[in-house]
Image 1 (tube, rainbow, N blue to C red):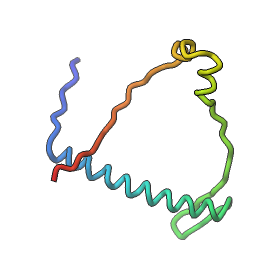
Image 2 (spheres, rainbow, N blue to C red):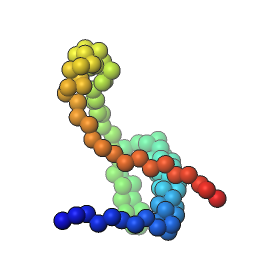
Image 3 (cartoon, rainbow, N blue to C red):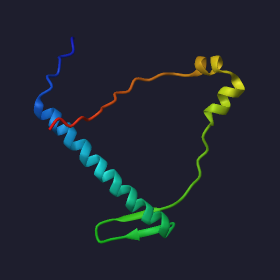
Image 4 (cartoon, helix red, strand yellow):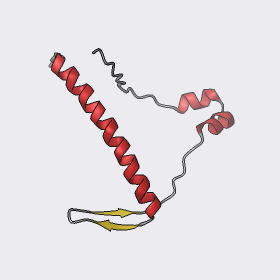
Length: 94
């Protein structure tokens, strides 16, 4: 069965721009709040509505530049996989 083509409306464009602006603002506020909790340290913090447990852990990741240097670019390319992603750039017109 063929996939139906979505018709993009002006309202959809405006809503996407608005949602992305709200996300930027919320992400910035979340960063501020998380920094406050980081400074306060590990523990459980409660309000009348919810509780937040803060803990810290370590994570190790591969240094891809060092791996590429060690194994060679060709082998790294052979062992890599590519996935598609959609990029959205917001441009204000008014």
